[in-house]
Image (cartoon, rainbow, N blue to C red; front, top):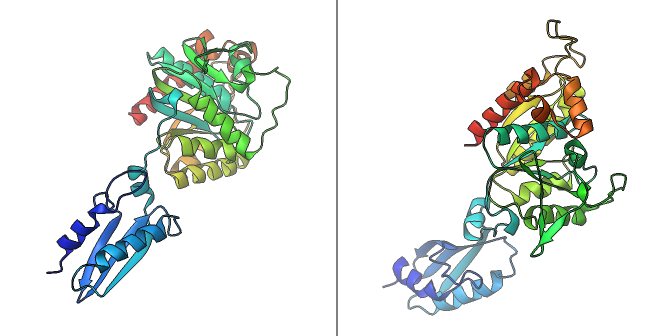
Length: 346
């Protein structure tokens, strides 16, 4: 008697060429329906125009069509969902990052908001809290992490893997270490993606609790490449109070919402200026922008950083604030931000 069990047993021999498993067992043949002598079923593939489509459909029609009491076999081809495809065909981890527990990308839609300064000091604050931390300067257009950390441009290799520099308790890698400080980087789409994959996969990061990634501004190739390579990467958004910055940050938030990456929080930089410890704060760039965006995008505001002379000087002289003055008022804000980030990622 023709029934679904018989059809499923018959189709056990239809194997996926890459997975070497039955399409029945892995759920790529589904929704088997018998109406009289007509059998209909669904074949789920990577896309409806998959090159495997015709071969699979022909084999299914031949096998099921040969069963007694079957006059017609109809195969409907649909695309696997994003989640199904990721489960069936998981990406092999890049060699360099296979022992990293958490990824934190520091992003902003706008340049000039102090994103790299915050990435460096948040990484240092995490390291000060006992975590093993790496810092990747993924700004392929204007890498400034080496200057902020006072690093030379010499790198070593071991077994075809790049050895990251170590300083202030961080493992650090930047394109700025591979060329002169004044040399221009001219990258286009495919080269950007290739270079970022190299910075992730061919660097001997070792075991880390966090890899903090300083992204370039905007929503272009570097951000998209990181999003594709690291689907579990958390995002820390940086803004300044004024509307012109908020507009660009909204675009960056929209990108990561589309890719499904968790937005761990928002930091407002250059929130205010204090001429001395007892003075009233001066809102040079306006006020309330970070709080407004936090409510609008439903992202927690993790901290508001002032315009701080020591913070700026630390970025220029290669000794960041979290090294020179970790217990200053601004240093304590960075410590709080790092604690909140770690808590939310866990």
